[in-house]
Length: 380
Image 1 (spheres, helix red, strand yellow):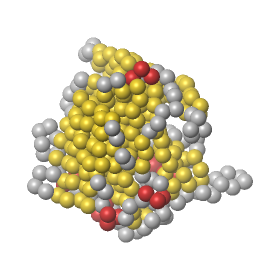
Image 2: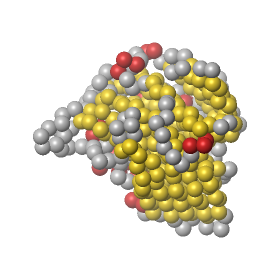
Image 3: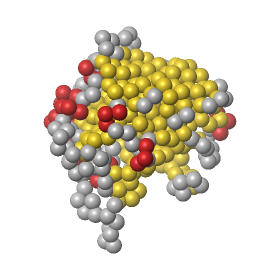
């Protein structure tokens, strides 16, 4: 069995270890796939927003993204060129915190009949903003505003969005600069943000005030092959939480762990494979999901430690949404989980920030089926 996971993990280790925290520019927000040899490679470029927020007596989670796809290498994305318009949304009662039940959720995108033509996506650059239009939804970037501003607007999957994301701290360029993508086959950033606005769902309306958000723009070339990068039992994890001026990010692309804590303008990195601190992340409880049939992880413990900072969180899930990505080599499950955490972040100067029943986002994705399942194991 031949897979690409070792080089995939090593590139994340190297990129995260670099010091690179420039502001996001208007140029960064235009389509970037042209820096790659897109006529003869596979790639995806993503523009996305994540959100968790308390809205009255409900907790909500949203993930919405647009993808530009090119399948001119191995044919990872099946089509030579196409686009995806992704949405997952959860709204569960706050009273359910700490327990799991079979919640309803919104999902659209990545089903084969929902795929868009590449040219259906409209990208317009103005004097102070860039707008990506996927069907009736707009992803608006205004990085020159103070603080930098992004907006998620319009209609998708029965929802109507009017959300403003205002940057906190510095961008996390965990994928490297777009200028370096021709060499590394990956680039992009995450930005922690404060979110305000509203989400309408039929007759229901969720007012978001001071929500916890992430804005993301990523480009990955041939190195991104979801099935070959994540052969079972590998699982990719991504989570975040913010409180006050503190932001926590943990990412497990396969078997390596990397993390970042932001406090104000200061960045503290955890990257054990590069000699920076230690990380342990353990799943400690599961729930039999009656809808997916999956033995879903629903409780975890995260510890990230270094001389500069210690993060220690107990995390519990109370809602989930999921989807399946059908790729050339198999099927990938992607699951978002709305959670609360208890614990703390403690800094070397003695400052300690407590987290108590604090809302946060967790997510994972994994290969669940390989196209060539054979008697001696899957063939990639």
